[in-house]
Figure 1: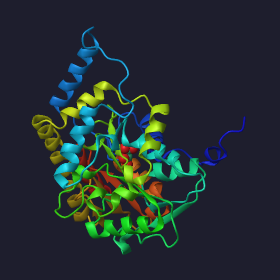
Figure 2: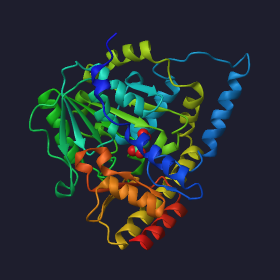
Figure 3: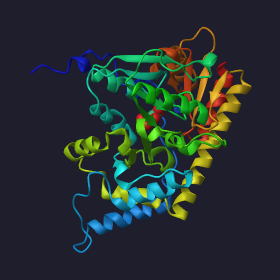
Figure 4: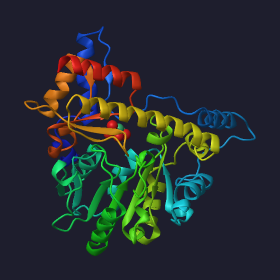
Length: 387
Ligand code: MLT
């Protein structure tokens, strides 16, 4: 047996694992410390009751002879795929067929698994900084990576790749910088992909945080995107399904990849659970929608509290408006990891070091607004005292 040489060569641990490990080490030596976790983008508010009720009912169905069911369709139940088209796409003028929508066990798995659709020698363009799974997945597959630096000077919107990139990962609203693209900016990426016969994997996990008018919610709001873009969405960041696991991926037939993705899923994936799909369906009821909007409003307020508080302390702050992440420049004399350690040791505050998202993230840290508002207020107070 020869192990995967690319995976074997990968150094260090996954970013969020490293943060958990450092936090654990700190709490082990400071058992009385109240650590405030503003690091990973995980939910802190309960899942809305209508969604929970739908999942309870689904569990109950599985308990009885008349309603019990076994395996579902690998691509997900048609009732959920139709609801997604009806509520998430049709109102934006986007027409999709049910067989172009694939229910997943969360965006994270699909963002990695989609890599299997492409030839091993395909190059990948990835924004730097970016969600670390794109880089890690591409490294595991031994692909050439073209990094596209984004920084304050280009308003965190990198230039198009100078050379041909076969696969392009885009995430807007962006994790970690919180940047959004206008329709015109997004159109440029789609035009590039059409000219170069590339494919865009568009991570739209934070779409529900878009507030400002004119910002596209889906890449299919641009012309020609159905030929060149796969869109990955999540119920985690909107409905709070980080523990439930449910998302979906749109693979339009025009990409030429829809049949291949179905083939791959049927072989390797037995479908998302019936229970989580019933929970996801309840997101599209009026009362489910209200519960989701309430939670989103609370996280958006937290983003505002964090941005305002950091700004008032003199920090350079980006994002936090159409996104749950606040991207913050570290004070002079710190690296992003040394500032992470400083905040953990002196303030018992956990953030995410920008360098963990890529070389261009050096000099920044990210704060997550998925945190509790009172924790954010407390974190800001503590930071004021040690500044
Ligand atoms: C994060 O950036 O905190 C992530 O989105 C967490 C995740 O969903 O993997």
